Amino acid sequence: MKFHTPSFILGFGSAVVVLGTAQRLKPAVVEIAALGLHLARLGRAVVERQREHAEDLWAEVEERARHLREAPRRRRAGATTGNGKHVPGAANAQPGSASH
Image (cartoon, rainbow, N blue to C red; front, side, top):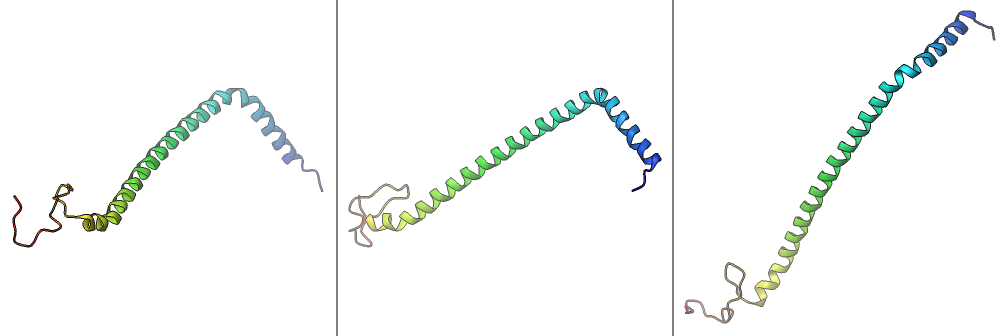
């Protein structure tokens, strides 16, 4: 492999420039990293909020499914009024008779 002088000079010069500007670039790198950390924390908060919303929605779905699953049992147990309260004797009432 041949030694290529212009490539060596360019590589050495770029290393000197990087090492020379490292002290001046350090505050900018720190600021960019701090901004990235702040954005990551904001993103995590948004994800957590959405996860909590999804969990609440899933709990409502499970509650509704449980309510639908228990509805036939409530109908077999006896008649209820529209508000879900049991009406005594309504299961044995004959059609056309009014209970007072």
